[in-house]
Amino acid sequence: MHQTICFILLCTIFIGTTLSSASGNRGVKKPKPWEDPDRDSSDDLLVTKKVFFDMEIDDEPIGKIVIALFGETCPVTVQNFAALARGGWKRDTSLTYNDTIVHRIVPDFVIQMGDVTDGDGTGGRSIYGKHFADENFYLRHWGRGWVAMANSGPDTNNSQFYILLTRARWLDGKHVVFGKVIEGMDVVDQIAEVDTDDFGFPSKIVRVIDCGVIPVKEPYHIPHPNDKKTSP
Image 1 (cartoon, rainbow, N blue to C red):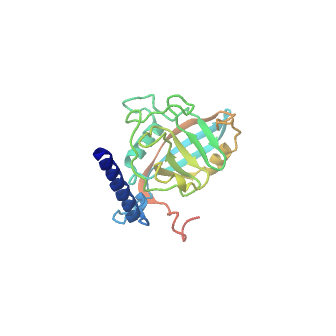
Image 2 (image 1 turned 90 degrees about the vertical axis):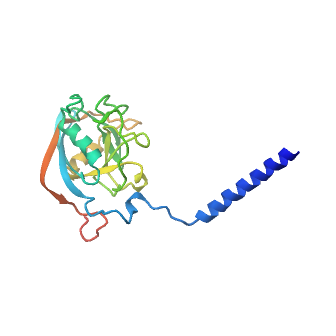
Image 3 (image 1 turned 135 degrees about the vertical axis):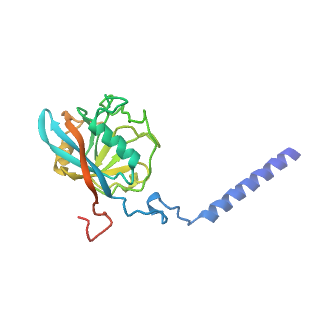
């Protein structure tokens, strides 16, 4: 009887403490990664490298996509992406985006690609190993053309990435944004129009026929999407 009373008393205390704690935290907004007031964000959109992808659909060339990379903000992610675009990584020369395909298209949302091992979206590998950690979530899914790492959960980045066709703020804080399409969005739109099966796999072969790194001699900033005076 004594043990039963003690158990009930402990449960009552625990529940009361939990409710009190929840009540005390009510209305307190947890800051987002991109809202850190102590972080210098002036170079968030500083372009340090560019990569290109020459694309084809069913053996017909359709043009070039050029992506600006923000190496000051996401140096680890950018190094991985640029190395795979360049190819010939010294530790594993088979790791390259060249000859890979777009394996997923979701109209009005994303095109996804970059599976350097299996090609169908089930694989992928980084220059650091099978996976690498989420570097940060300072950049956001502001709209068309922003580029982010695909993943299967926290800290599961490999080689797969996606290009946004629209704003997708619900992905902020879940996927690392590290680049922006600055040329060839019309090519991305052509790819987005390819029919797919029920799982988003394209009915035509959309392939990277060449890719590489474009050096940036003088890093430069692109307009911030939140700057209404300069954003398109």
